[in-house]
Length: 429
Image 1: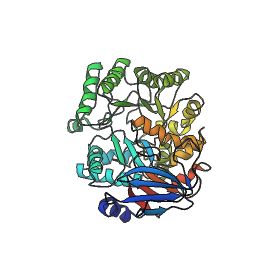
Image 2: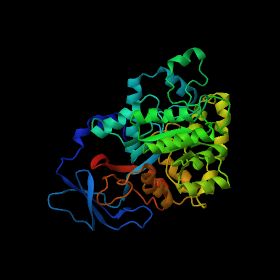
Image 3: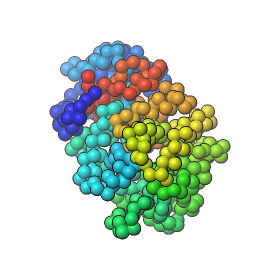
Image 4: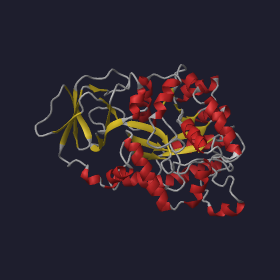
């Protein structure tokens, strides 16, 4: 495993790893999962030029003068996609509350970049960041795109939207004297305000909108996970996002809040912990994706093991509920034909360990093959990106390799030893 100093060196010494614009690189391997959901190819040569895949050749062959990277018996896949992360933090419970009132904007930005590098080194070349009140991840998105720093490709939601005292109200549990110092332009009450809240995020330059229709496990209020947003508020937010050409992701745990969001036309449901039969029907009617975020439970378990008082009582009660119920919704969604996209909620769980989600997905009803599809072609479709998620001519050269066969044992994806993003070699062993 790379040391912290090694990751920093890769992050800030980016030009040393970048290919010259005219250089052709050929990646060769015995097995290549070029199209997730289909059988892997045998010996293959992947031709990369100017950050894009230009050809897949049978066997080991290469244009004259090309740089050859022979990965031998390692299993090659497209770069992975995590559809639900929070790069600005890795803390939880009381530690997260303290972090929120003590970190500077500069600290937030550097932490986001640090977590982004951990994610990229783990083989996740694209992420959807669903909520960051500081703007750090929006800035990181642009810095990565401009080539100033290394990091995953980022689709960012800006500030998550909820009602007052809802899941995204940052004043919850804080002394009233502190409320005036917290920017809360992400809160809305009534349909008109919810339209305005969405437009504020559009004005900030976000790629996607996120709202919360229910309470959350980490909300610092004893209001459970039931519905918090009225149907007209949710519909107003969804319609406004779509009016501006933005997809909308909806945080929803409880049944009513999930169903309200799907009926309004949500593009994805995040967590979706308590579906009913109507929920499954609405998923199919809306052609929406379910993003299970199962590995949140790993973060909860680890923090409680280190400190039984890591969470205040109102949160701890919900944490224990989440530990018991996680995975049951996925077991219902898979046989019902609901589309699944991979997402971890990393930040609640640890950044850089995103692949832990694969094991939980398989444990709760998916196969290794369908879990990989969820993290490649399905996630790319959810994000609206038509040039990632497969190893195909014209696509970004986002390529990873592992030892072992993840189609036989998905845990192989926990140890990625080669990462290329957009033609740049990020990690090689």
